[in-house]
Length: 89
Length: 517
Image (tube, rainbow over all chains, first blue to last red; front, side):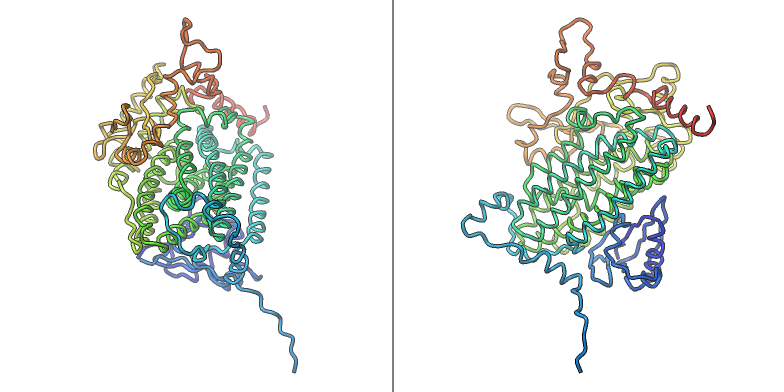
């Protein structure tokens, strides 16, 4: 199974997002680098709006991710509730 | 009972559909092929443009909202960095030379990418990809601007930043990234998308923007970190666009597969060659290093690119050609490139140096198969020579590869002790190449690559001297005249870092920043 990843800047905006991603994807690995994190996951990684909202206590639009997103890999499926990264093979 | 039910807002997918579909119309008094004259000649067959899906579903209103927020953050940091003399917080003034190479060699490509996407955004007959290319075109001009703004702060204090536009079209090593993009923007719209949208954005920009920019942060350069990550977050969108383009083209018609495969082979190799510069920046020009070029290559190319090509296998796509050589060379190219810049340090618009002992030990540890055996002895020899006042500057101009325009510095596949040379006879002239990859690319389109403006050839033909220079005059110094033509000031912008003006100024200013003079 191939690995997908999402890389985010590290700041106060992303702290709850990173926490939510790690909670929702127990198989994911957190890789900390200067000023950024790279979260790797076998096969599939999901970013869930409700988990982020629970942590930040306000509405969150998943497209807000663009502000602090650095990079990602995999095929993307985005809806109002979830952003999913996955490889078919 | 009447109940007022709030009208449900459209979901992301429906909203995207409404904002990007049905915007187009079928022309009645002009022919489609006259409106989109470049859509067919590459042989790519598209039957239904509406099958196109932008995976991020970003619409223009959301684009402005989030990009504006990113830009506000970026400029706040740039201002704070400038007001606080942030440049004095970088680890070591040697670091600034990596930034010089970035501004002169990479930022202009952002501008060319802007032009390229504006062009293909006009040429695609489908409205969906036109919208996506339009946004990318705006992204790219923003990147060029934010990089120039961030780096202009350094131009107030340090040498070599002063005339990057002029240098881009003249200086020998800048012709490498420049010719790469010129090659892409002069291709057809589909090839451009595979070249830049897919090969460069998807597979290669991570190597440029992620580990290198994280390295900039590690070296105290807030300015570069901010524009770098800000740009790369757009790249995340561009990468998905590039992947979507490939999938879309391949799903449209089986005849497209061999054409796309050829482009992937060509552009992966072209991009890989350009990234040699980045490998050298990571291994030699960052005083504090986070990962070696080889490690970055393994993560972002072998692991991530490997997953990508495994995914694309369902369309019949195979991994790009020459991977064996690429895999072998990851132990070598950064060292070979730095050795070249060290030798030609008199003709570059930045300073060069030999690594110190601690840095050499780091290189030994990261490159156990190659550094001590092939590269350390040469660097130590050069260091000894420099200590005796005999800093080595190579005065013989190198032969350049006709395709990638890099000096012949790469070695034979599997043999790092022998320089690799290939040649082709074409219409009575001999053309030279650094590798089988570059040779094969030439052979497929020789009429394109014979037109290359090769800086070394141009110098020998007398085309790189300032106006009024007389090569027949007594005591004519060709190097001095070429530097004038480049707008590189001898003794300020070039030569060794040791004893340079940047080194002296940085030490003095940093001293002033920490005590009362």
